[in-house]
Length: 217
Image (cartoon, rainbow, N blue to C red):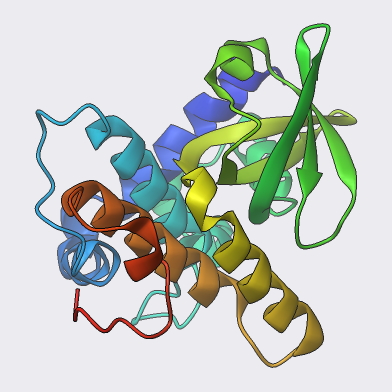
């Protein structure tokens, strides 16, 4: 399976769980994900990126209320999906996904070398399409999967301003020291902070990237 075929299977899977059958589940998920981050404007340049973030979170991270498990976990039980061999392979690939904070290190031929800020290890990601989208001064959230002994990015990225690095590292260290803290909760919270930063451009980043929230944003 190549990357394009893998993405086609992922799109099929997400499409099933965003169909009319799961209308209420989708509505609840959108409220949970987009709440308190400003209106989602289709004319904004980051609209497509936001939707990629949402759909990957919805399929890979958020347990459905009706199953108490994520769509990824239960999708191979739904016969009406009519899963092909490629789909089944894609599901196994998706189960390897690493959702984390990363630091861009350098480009390496057509690949990208990044550091996982939670685990501390470096990963060489095979994907030339994104080579020109990275800035060494920005930490970013992303998902990486392993397929055919190579690593690939999924399509959701969330880039944070350089001024937020200290706060992000402090939060990561807290999670590293306390196994009871949920990494996904932190990733979602910081994702919301990023788009509050976009929404309130007149506010200093340190007043948004904070646990105090004195401004009530």
